[in-house]
Amino acid sequence: MARAKVQYICQNCGAAHTRWSGRCDACGEWNTLVEESDGTGIAAGPAARSRKGRIVEMQPLDGESEDAPRIKADVSELDRVTGGGFVPGSALLLGGDPGIGKSTLLMQASAALARNGNPVVYVSGEEAVAQVRLRAKRLGIGTSAADGTTVQLVAETNVENIVTTLEAGKAPALVVIDSIQTLWSETVESAPGTVSQVRTSAQAMIRYAKASGAAVVLVGHVTKEGQIAGPRVVEHMVDGVLYFEGEGGHHFRILRAVKNRFGPTDEIGVFEMGDRGLREVANPSELFLGERNRAAPGAAVFAGMEGRRPVLVEIQALVAPSSLGTPRRAVVGWDSSRLAMILAVLEAHCGVRLGGHDVYLNVAGGYRISEPAADLAVAAALVSSLANKPLRENGVYFGEVSLSGHLRPVSQAAGRLKEAAKLGFDNATFSSGGQKLSKPGLKANTIETLADMVVELVSPSDGGES
Ligand code: TYD
Ligand code: MG
Image (tube, rainbow, N blue to C red; front, side, top):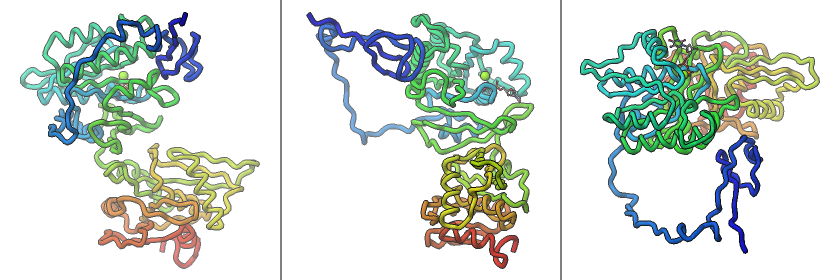
């Protein structure tokens, strides 16, 4: 007789195992295997087979639907990243290292919402009501509107209690869960913070959001590897994932969208953490260029883009003779394999030998660049440091370097130039790809290859601070 086929499914990664074990071989999580029948053969059972679904309505794709309405938080850097405000009935996950300022950001946004007449419920699973109040007081934020709309605090971690409490009253505009890792459900036996608890709790809160039309923000702590601790599954369940990040020792913070079903994912919000909470930074270039060392060798200003917003940032390189067999390559704020590529192109096509040198590369201010357009600025900083010669004063650089040593034009050149001109730069080195830019606003120094840049920098007649 055929036996019911039983599988053990990892609740974290979904891998199927034929035998139970304490640890999933696929993802390495402990205690996540759960017995599930595979739904075929005898195990599926007559009940399962006879259940007939009901007919659901189909809709044409090109039918009319309204734009998602928005609840603006009045924290414009946050609204920019969410794509114009919180969407009612949606769920957002806000991830970040402990202590980065997630609670502070959400408390400030909650207070601003309440001041504009949107009721907010702030569920704190980590801090007691008194602590949250104290923080709000320290932030100096008035949290009540004239009509009595305010931020209601709840210190609770049981998800059934939270949902029942929320359902008892009128649905608020926003519910903040700080944090999802502290929630637990009675229907699951494992401890709070485990994969299944976090998943069940997140599901309950998302269901509440869809049913009530309240926007729900879940706070999640991030592990050392940079993932939202435990369940990556929560990332799939929610409508948007935002990361709040910053470098240790620097007091500015960047909010980034990595997933957004209602808006773009390439926008960033920039904040500065002060003694009275987070301050919005409307012009990030000024912050990143703040302590610029104008005439030092090894420093190049990169005209970057974050979404539709230009961000100018200084790239610093230090190239020094190495005493090591394998010279050191250290990078902060950029991709180290990208640096290896630039070094190889400089060596192969421009005759710049860096094989016997240690190379240190730093993006000023703790900012992190992900654009390949920074290639040219990095190369300029490296060559400038090696030659011990400062780059053109008041100049910016951008361009993607290909393996052949040619420069590729990058997107939104006009926007980059405009921002550079606005901040007082008077020349730009980049590749235009043969196109003519009308009115760049500063001296455009277009080049075709990386070698052009190197030649110009090291030749005594036309380089340097001429
Ligand atoms: P918090 O919002 O509690 O971080 P998270 O919720 O992400 O864990 O922020 C805590 C840090 O922020 C703490 O180290 C102190 C700092 N901070 C300030 O510098 N200024 C302030 O006004 C506040 C409220 C916090
Ligand atoms: Mg917190």
